[in-house]
Length: 299
Image 1 (tube, helix red, strand yellow):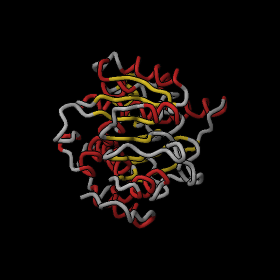
Image 2 (cartoon, one colour):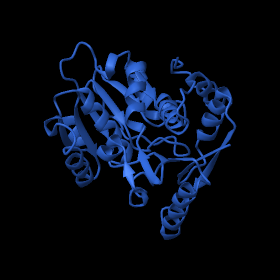
Image 3 (tube, helix red, strand yellow):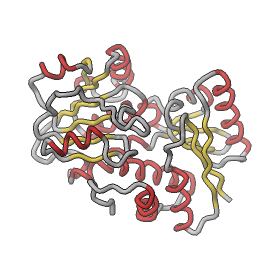
């Protein structure tokens, strides 16, 4: 029996158990998926260590990682996949022989869903030679999104309220991707209103707008969104975030991150089982819990 789980804090909004257990059932595999909430403090650090020991013993067969532990777990891991090493954050832990390894399925999961939702083969607009994207936020999810975009051929501007954090992200990724495709800007009304070059893509990687603070938004109030940009909000709960609503009202195409949630979960499960995962079963599970009236259903 597979024993899988998710660690992070808080986890009350998580749909991961329903996602994974629906997929396991469709695959004919016996297993369970538990939540392991670990606060980001000294006690939490000891709990992270304990979860890693449980993985090494085989008490847990696979562990997903979410905010705020995607980087905090790095000291407990023996090896990283190339993607996790480049991103500098993990969301999937697995045992390879005696080695505890970390992977990052957020990066490919994001790009796969972006390509589907926007209709862009390879995640690139066909009419643009080298498109530009604005990524809001500079945390672990921003690292995954930025890495996947630059790898696909985008120029990315990382925007954060803490400019030092954005610079740290860019400096770290510059070791693995073309540094000429990376730049930073302060995420503020004055900065955004002064920029002349508009992006083809705007991605929110911050938790602003996530349940239960559903009325918050990373985009400054009253400021117009970039013309013709595709807006992708990694927040998937609620189904209609404030940012997505603003984009749709402005006549832009916009989607939440529910598809990325499904893709990264499926890629994690494929890592743990070595078998193809039926995305349709996962979509049916989450849509029964979180209707998505503004999004097309993933195939």
